[in-house]
Structures are given as structure tokens and as C-alpha cells.
Image (cartoon, rainbow, N blue to C red; front, side, top):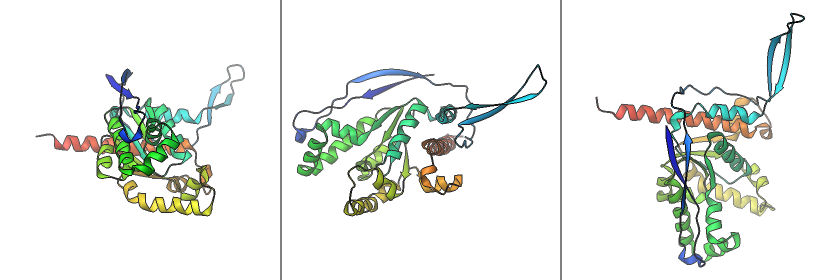
Length: 274
């Protein structure tokens, strides 16, 4: 089966107040295996070492070999058993953090999807961070419309992993656009969000992060699934959250995606006329 998808580049006119988006499209093709089964993904914990045994013909003894394996390979192999995703885009919501960004990029690579950060697209469209900040301060409604326009363009495409900014969960319109794909809340403890943010350098800034979280958590909770870093650590028996790898998180996301696609398929089957 061959799927054709479009990727958009977004630009604006010189004046941010009259924000306009253009999306010249370029096509690509991706082959999706049609004969793969759809089994439940089994958990693989940091498969950096794979042990195997072979027979030594000269001594008739068993020789144990240890091979070092890239831990991301397990994620890629797991992604291969998700044919029923059928190009559905994945939206990651939650507080901005290096964990969320790295997770999005790994998932895109594993699923052979394109990766986008919706906030970065808005910044680029506005002409950079300083221009975007000035635009937002002078025209809050216009900035929100720009966020909606970015989501609208992304939701019209498939085979994307999108790290969605907070604008994605601040209006019913934007939340509806996320329904074009599967949304997952990546819930990271605020102290780790604060440590990962370059701009956070004081207790006042940390309290602002906490305040922002309180404002956004209802919108985050509307996601199709929630993946908590703390919960993943508990499942793996890890006391230090720093011990949870991006690969661990990605495996859990893939399991959530599988559950969601399986439920969706069951609902579609149930809706068919007898």
C-alpha cells in the first residue's frame, strides 16, 4: 500500500499584524507493510546488551557472546508492528521540556514520520523569537490566530509527530484540530521542566512555570492518553527519574498508541451495519 503525504513550509509577510501563511507542498511516498500482524507490544528495558549462545564446533562447548545494541533499535522494531496506525499523526502536548522534544524526534524517526514543533513554526513564521514576542504583546488575538493556523495546516497532513505548544490546548478550535490525530500528554515533573528551561533562572521564574502548569493542565488532560514520567519510573522500579531513558518513554508511548488504534478499530467495527 502506498501513502502520499504532504509537508508544509510556513511563511508570512513582513508585517506580523497581517499574518499570512503559505504552504507550498512537496510530496513523498512511504511503503507500509500490509501483511504485518498487530500484536501487543512487549516492554523492552534498555536492550543495550543482547546475549546469545552458539556452539563451538572444535571444542563442542557452548560459547556465550554479548553484543552491544543501539537501544533505539528496540523502539524502531516495536514501531514496525503498528501498521494500523495508517499514517495517523501524533501530537505530544504538555509543558515544553528537552524530554518532550527528544521523545518527539525519536518517535518520528522510529515511525518514519516527519517531526514538527508547532511553537517553532509560529516563531519562524513571525520572523524570529523577538519579532514573535513583540507580535504577541501587541496583538494577543492575532498571535492566537497564528497558532490556530499552524495547527490547521499540520492537521491537514499525515505521518507527522508534532510537539504541540500550549496554544494547542487553549481553545476548543485547537483542541478539535488535535482530534485529526492521536494526542498524548507527556507529563514531566515541574522541577525537571524548570531545570531544562534555559530562561528559568530564579525562584520567581519557577513559580511562573508552576502557575502556567495550573492554567494548562485541564487542556492537557483532554489528550487521548497520558504518559507520566513518574509512572514509567515506578513501573521500571527506578527511584531516580534521571534513570528513565527516552527509549523507555518511547516504548510506553508506542504501547499507548497501540491501545488507542486498537480501540478505534473496535469502534469502527461496531459501527458497521449488520
